[in-house]
Length: 255
Image (cartoon, rainbow, N blue to C red):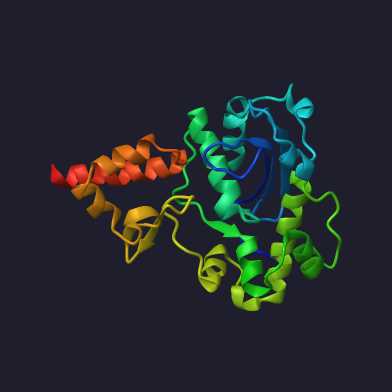
């Protein structure tokens, strides 16, 4: 079994699309595992306050009609935050999509969702490191069962938890804690969820554009207008938040 020191919440989202800056959550499922193995589930449909593209509805089956009377994210943000308080976070491709988009929604709702001190485990990273396949194939491979109701948030989140347990049995070198899992698969240090910045030797580095590979602090010191350009640009709120933290740190150092 998985050895936990605090609750681990597996998150799965169904959304209007895959753009962290502009798309919205339509459905969220949280499967919360307590250290004693107790499981609780919360699932909600959410009104995205925007039309759902047909290409997205074709994947998850959620239509405008289904969510027109659902609450907005802002209306359920405090309830979701309370469910996730004190939890580490897990999911499938969650480090790159579900958790970043959830964080964006909290920011838009004006609700502080602190990531500091939370561990994250992305089952897709383990799977790709070890076998390199997709969620349905992962469920078949590790659990020897067919994933019913794929793209139902609750089914996907539950399957993800079951896959992780099977991975721990298959790969004893992963250990039984989130620390040993992430150390074994070489999980990267995240600066911003969109990966516009990366951490190298303790320094934030640009990971895009004309300054790719350059220190963020050094670029902003020499060209502070670049900060203004990014803040006006179509970057996710989390990216702008991290950029502002770095820029504020520079100004404090300069006195």
